[in-house]
Structure formats: C-alpha cells, structure tokens
Amino acid sequence: MTSAGDDDRDDDAQLRQLRAVWVSMRDEEPSDRGLASLMAAAREKASELEHAGQSSWWQRVLASLRRPPVLALATVTVLLGGALILTQRRADMKADATATSESSADKNVVERSDRERDESVPDARRAGAGSPAAAAGSGAPTADTGAATTGSAPVEPTLARPTVEDPEVVTEKAPRRDPRPTPKLKAPTTASTPTAKAEFSVRPDDDAPAPAPAGGSEAGPRGGMGGSSPPLAIAQDEAPVRSDSVTSNAGVAPPPKPKKPIARTAPPSIEGEDRQTTKDASAKDGGKTQPTLEELVKQCETAATRGDCPAVRVLAQRILTRSPAVYKSRVATHAAIKRCLPSTAPNAME
Amino acid sequence: MITDQADEDLMVLYQKGEVRAFEVLLSRHRRPVYNFILRFVGDKETAEDLLQEAFMRVIKGAEAYKRQAKFTTWLYTIARNLCVDQTRRRKHRKHASLDAPMDSSEESGTLMDVIPGNEMASDRKSVNKQLHETMQLAIAALSDEQREVFLMREFLDMPFKQIADVVGVPENTVKSRMRYALEKLRLELDEYKDLAKAAP
Image (cartoon, rainbow over all chains, first blue to last red; front, side, top):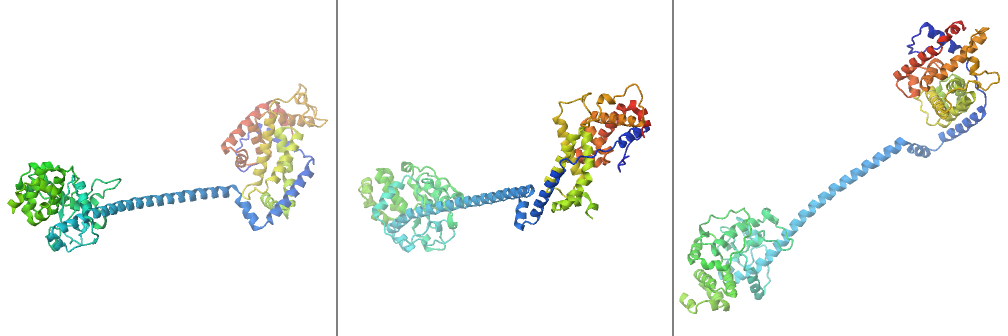
C-alpha cells in the first residue's frame, strides 16, 4: 500500500479493500526490445555532451548567446539603445532648429540694420552737406542709428564711411522715400555730445519695424542687435512727423512713449499740409520734436517735383524761417521749387 | 557509488558525458514508467514503444535539464504527454471489444471471460485474476484526467503537489480528480466487494 506524505485519503473499509486489490496487482516487466538502441542513443548523446563540455570558451559563449533569454536581452538592449539614440538626436535637432531660427532672426536684424544704415548714411551725409552747422557739429562721421536709439547713450560715430555718394543717387532716392513719413530724430545725446544741438539728424525710423521687404522679419520690441532699440527711435520719431506735417494739434499731443513701438501708419499726403497753418511750424519750433531742416528741404523738393506748389510754398516758408542760408543754398536754387515760388518771395523774404 | 546518487545528480553526470549515470537512471525508472504507461494505455506493445520514446526524449533533452527540477517530475511529464497523445490518436476506438484479447499473450482471455458469471470462482487464483482484470477494466473506464491522477497517486505514490506539476493543473484540481476517480471505482467495483474481501 502506498502512503504519500500529504495523504488525505478518506479510507473507509470498502476503499481499503479496493486499494488492497490494485496494490496486489503485480507490475509488468518491460521487454528488452529497443533497449539496445536506447543505450546506443544514450552513448552517442553522452559523447556529444562530453565534447560540448570540452568545447572552447568562445564556443560556449556562442552557445550561451544563442539561448532565448540572451537573445531577448540583446533585443531589448538594441531597442532601448535605438530609442535612446533617437531621443538624443531629436533633442539635438530641436536645439539646432532653435539656434538656426535665432541666428536667422539675428541675421535678419543685422541685414536690416545694414540696409537701413546704408540708407541713412547718404541722408545724413547730405544733411551734413546741406547744413554747415550740422557738418561742424558732427565732425564728419555719421552717427550710427543704433546709438541714436539708445536715448541717453552718447552718439558714437560707429560708422565712418568715407564714401562720397553720387548726389544724383541721393536725389533719386529722395522721391522714392517721399510718400513714407520720414521722421527724423535728433541725436538723443543732447547733454553728452555737442552734435545733439546741431541740426545733424539720423534716421531712426529706419530701425523701426518697417514693412519688411521680402520676408524680412521685424525685430519687434526686442530691438535689434547690440542693445539698439529701434522702437524707441520710432516712438520719438513718429510723433514729430505727424505733428509737423500732418496735424495741427500734434504739438500739444503728449510726448511719445519711449518704449512703445508704433506701427507705421500710412503716410499722410503732402496735400494734407495744405490745410495746415503756418503757425504749426512756428509752434513746432519751440517744441521738442522739430522736423529737421534736411527733412523740410527734402519734402519741399519732393513736393516741387510732384508739382504741389502750395505745399512747396508752405515748406519753403518754414525753411526760410528756420534757416535763410539753407533756403538760399538749396531752396532758392532748386529749379522745381523755384517754379512754385512767387518770384518776389525770396526777395521779400530777404 | 554512482548507484546511490540521486536522480538529479545522475542526470547532471550524464550531462557531462557519463553514460553510466544514464544506465542507472534507466534501470531505476524503466519498470515503474512502463507500468504507468501500460495502465494508462492498456496495451503492452504500445507501452513498450512509448517507454522507449520517453527515454529517448530524456536523452535528447538532457542538455536542457536543470538541476533544480525533480527528475521524476520531468520523466513522468514526458511519459504522461506521450500517453495522452496516444489516447487521442486512438479516440476512434472508444470501447474495448469484448472479443478482443486483453493483451497480446496467448493465454490472456477476453473481456467476456472476466465478466462475472453466475457461478462463483473455484479457487483463489482465479478470483484474484478476475478481480485484477475487473480492476483493469474499471481503471480503463476512468477519464484520462482521473486515470492519470489515480495511477500516479496509487501506484507511483506521488504527492499531490508533484502530480499537479506533472499534469499542469492546480493541486486542488488533482485532489478533486482523485476523489472522483475513487468514487467511480467504488461504484464500478461495488458488486465485487465480496471478492475483494476474499482476495489475499
């Protein structure tokens, strides 16, 4: 009778009798059929196993590497490594993209700054040529627009371009820029540099977020490179133009907020100045934001070119009021302007 | 002595190329495995084939054997799977023929011979033979699940836990199957209880 350790047999009398029956059943003895072949296979396998045990270390390593757990581990390792590499590469690509966009933005700012500098240099140079006082005050080098926008910072002659532009080129440029409000800003270095008092002016509006030419990106309120702040220049710049050339009550308008970038509005037509009274000009003379003499001359030339004689007369009057010398040298000698002015006007003025 | 070593140690020795270890294992387990297979399938020839196949699988799978596994559990799992496959293959033969000999030997009778007649057995030997054959029929009438559990429990003296490992079911399921198997055998052999009492 068998007796297991975990026996929970419910041995009643009948079951015990039955169990006695099958326990008494004798076990059969298996025949030796196939025993020889079985032992032959066992010997062959044993020699194979023995040979496998004597195999070199690299064979054993190779055999162990072929086992499913090792293969699974290798697969998981490869997948994790791939995922890690992809993640790192994606992060690098993101960083590159960010750097590229920032650099392109900076590049746009630099390009625009260069372009505006190119535009402003002839203007300033011509202003210097037109105004002896400005030429004397500035001392030759053209003030950089970036310096002009810093407000309290002294105007630094960062760009000294000795190039002498063709006057015709300058005069050709003027009409093209004429429809735009071309506000001028005095150099903000009223206290630190003597050039501030002079009539020398820069074109800070060029630093403004001008309508970007082809795909140009605006620097926005952030300004441009090197801490220059074009919005400040615009803010100081836009108001005088409107007050000076368009509206009559601009003189009483509150001073422009220095940091707020003002969107460039459609330039008022010069005809609008017909409706202005000359007292505006005189009011502006005492104001903080006077249009520069150069600007007035340019507007006058433009109006004359366009044939807008009433505007020419108004502007000529203002120029004459502010600087008779400039009037003589640039207004009175200008053929187109002369056609609009009454023949007696200059003499009367004088 | 190699013959005194445990089955698992012998298997490890065989893994190292020791043929003698396998011989010891074979001599130790050949007979019980054969009887288990024979009582499972009920045919000597098939039982011998399956026995050889079972040990052949042990030889082939010797590399994969782990020392932690109990050798008998592994061996009887192989034998049991072979028996299950064999019984599935011959499913078409659901019932044993009453005219067919119970085994291949010449002197073995048919099932008709062991069905009890009205006359009592003349001597004890014939009573035992009749009882054993009836018992074989009753075991063959068990379902495969109940039969394998019954055979391992009553003839191989396996613990329920090991039976559960071999069969691949929970231990409680094994116990349940064992209970049902005993109940069925009790019913089948109820009319022979007097014979059982007379049996030595």
